[in-house]
Amino acid sequence: MIYAYASLTVTNPDSLAAYREKAADALNKYGGKVETATNAARGIDGTPQIPDVVALLSFPDSDSAMGWINDPALADIHALRRNAGGSDIVLLG
Image (cartoon, rainbow, N blue to C red):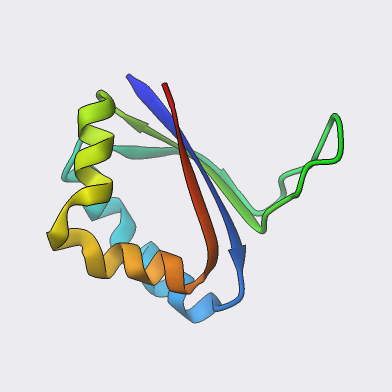
């Protein structure tokens, strides 16, 4: 199991809503899932930039995570997330 940290600063809520409708199926294609997500993240040490939405994703392995992000068939779905505002995803491992 490997995890990815996703953070979004939302400027286009409609695009994010459209993404959320399709995101689970896209993740499932590669064995991924949202472990937890929140729009109420809080910094507890230092002075971190707090995004509007934070999610912890899981995948069976790094190849699955890379397959998900690089799958040309999912490009339109990833574009919805990216068009929602700032979008960063960090693979943890």
